[in-house]
Image (cartoon, rainbow, N blue to C red; front, top):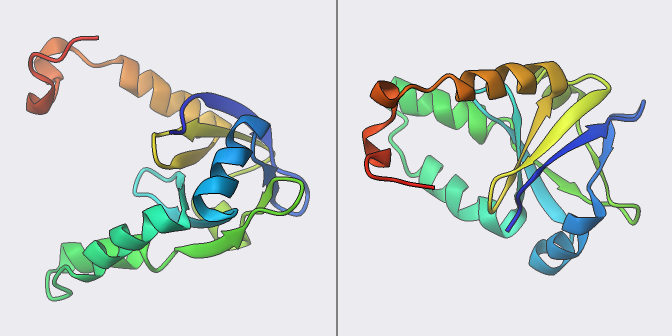
Length: 148
């Protein structure tokens, strides 16, 4: 289970170091084999490979005759890249994915249960502020009666 927000730096080769507290779990879950893909929110999603495989199967099972489904397939599966965490716990983020998510030196790694999101710092701050602007009338129906 991945949770928490961590500020990280991309090195000049486009690598990011996974925090030590997540490395053992990633090694146990997938031997450091991950999939990184684009998200419609302009962040990157980082999945342990076994978590990604059923998602890709479901996506590719959708009708490619539906233009919205085809666009989603192109985005998520088309951008998906297999990466291996190196011995130092680093992941290499490809130039194409860095460009898509507008990543520069400072990035935010956000645990989301079975996956991570990787955001450019300024985009993350804007996303967080937008999340704080919910009003009761705007809450999704699925959250009715939900309490923290």
